[in-house]
Length: 115
Length: 115
Image 1 (cartoon, rainbow over the protein chains, first blue to last red):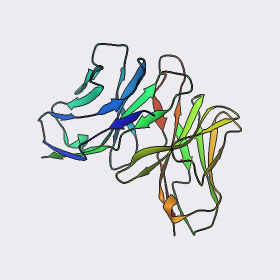
Image 2 (spheres, rainbow over the protein chains, first blue to last red; image 1 turned 120 degrees about the vertical axis):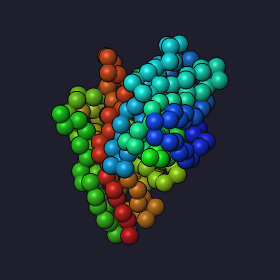
Image 3 (cartoon, rainbow over the protein chains, first blue to last red; image 1 turned 180 degrees about the vertical axis):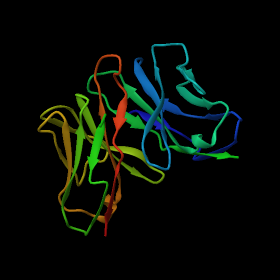
Image 4 (spheres, rainbow over the protein chains, first blue to last red; image 1 turned 120 degrees about the horizontal axis):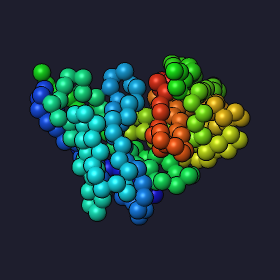
């Protein structure tokens, strides 16, 4: 079974600074998807960014970017110019590309932003 | 744009009682999922469905049953609630193909407490 590991339970960043959240995964597949989801105190799950494994170029969404290292099975999220609204729990997730595949989540990391 | 709607949002049960959580999506998504979220555990898949009339077990299916009689609805049932089922439950749906494929859309969550 696929596993997703987020080894840091908590991180803190100064407002306007940059922070990187780590994620590793285990799979024998070559084609899959990786995601970062954000869960603010409202509890709503919000998609931050998505990466397709067959694409070598790292995905970017405004201040959010990923460092996707396929050989190392690493998928880290970089948040630039951190804002107070970035404070939330962040989940890394993995999904195989097959029609019957499930999405597996890591345990999450709580990010706090210091003003 | 209703997206994914979960009802109820909050519920308190006594041990042994039964209840059903309803998930409804209006996006014509093929796949639907039920997750539970517990502190330090991330999101764990309970059951999922790849289409109307089909269901499958996830990571933690014991004590739960599901049904998908209509494409837009996915019901999660607890036949005899136990305190270990105290959790926040999330429903999600996913489009199998097309430009928005492979991205989970979540409901707002349902907090269930079993006394």
